[in-house]
Image (cartoon, rainbow, N blue to C red; front, side, top):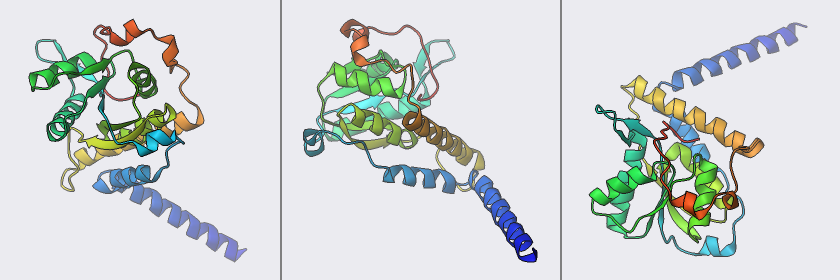
Length: 236
């Protein structure tokens, strides 16, 4: 009986210590960095051999949300802006077609054209990550792409593209704030983003989104027509 109580006591102490350490790590770069590392180890679904062997032939930029400026005009939020900047930098190093996916596509396209990049392909009917992949696959035949989104969203996005037969090489865009040991609030924003993506990834695996429409349910006209003034703050 004494031994049993000692085991329970030790287990409680170790469990409590682990919980405390995890909570503390949320305010440091450690937690979010660990999540990104774990995401990088996750395998992708099987894809056609051609997708696995072909080189990337385009950049695909996933929208990260819209916001309003001081004049109440719709603009890219900081997530989307960083993705546009990442695409522009990559394009200037290696010019390839750029596919813009999401309701943010018109604003992403405008920003890129203002920075000297044209010949863009837009898909602005999708409203979540699953639809990003399905509608992109319908919009243009692709086997392998450079995928641009943030590092937390990347694993979930790559999985969805793989399910639609598209291989991807990640090009992570930075988050609006950087990890910094001296700035716990910044680290906590990364931790929140990481926790959200862990939950969303598990949801996609265990219980896929019911509102993820099949690409065949959306007409080509819908894929090309701007979607009004819808705005979102992060990936779904």
